[in-house]
Image (cartoon, rainbow, N blue to C red):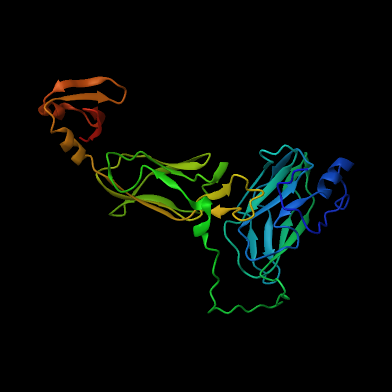
Amino acid sequence: MKRLFTAIAAVSLAAGSFGAFADAETDAIFANVITRPAEGVNLDYFDGMYYIGFPDASQISDNPNVVVLKNTSTGTTYRAMTSMASEIAGSQDNGVYYIFTIGTQITEKGEYEVSFPVGAFTINGESNPAFTTHFSIGLAGETPDPDPDPDPDTPVTPVDPSENPLMVFSVTPEPGPAQLELLEVEVTFPELGNDNIMGPIDGKTYSLTDKAGEEYGIRIGTDYKKFTVYIEENLPNGEYTLMLGEGLFELLPEDFLINDKYPYAPMPDILLTYVIDNGSIVAAVAAADTYTVVDLSGRVVLKDVPASALSTLEGGIYVINGVKTIVRR
């Protein structure tokens, strides 16, 4: 059977061990559990995303953000920021999975326990029992210190994300050259799987401001491998900074259930500078002898008129001699 998860080395979720299920089929489903990280594995770091799969199930739903991850060596506790449950996309076999993320990379050494309370999810219509899984960080060949006292002068160096292809992105329109207008900005991550951009994540920051620090309204929508920032008001001439904070979206590769090298990445900080300057464009079209003006619906407003006739235009967006132009009144 094709597996899209890394198998547990020593699974403790034996058939019937939970009890009280409606039938033997559900017992069998919980007897075949697969996780990433694998049960008992020692990691150099935890990337912030945990998967648990049930290859023999056909339906799953989740109760968001109830799973708890705890470093039992230090007492540090993390709660799921986001969670999702779904069928295994693209698999020829049956199977479902549950994913939760904590929104940060963990490098703190210790033994970790993942606690699933009753009702964290349902499998084939039945609520899960309470259970735990386990992994460790940085303990290969070591005995964990029951009362660790980390050296504050020794910084923890997170894994360098610069080589992670998930973080490669393109932006449309490109920042730099003066724009006639700025209605939306599209950010695309080509290495993501379809629908594998998750967010915006609550608590993460984004803004559009001018040089004086005045903020302008924006909203964000997602679509497959990209997200789009929509500017909700007309921007006057000037310079603007679009700030999209680190972790605003969570990025998953096409085969995120089997990609061990780059299984997950928080979106990097993105800082874009745009210049709005419609005056220079108006000056450029003003060099012509006559002007034809068309509105955005294709209606001819003025045809073959002298430059002086442009002063009669109401404020709005027009195509003047083939150039999209903003007229402000």
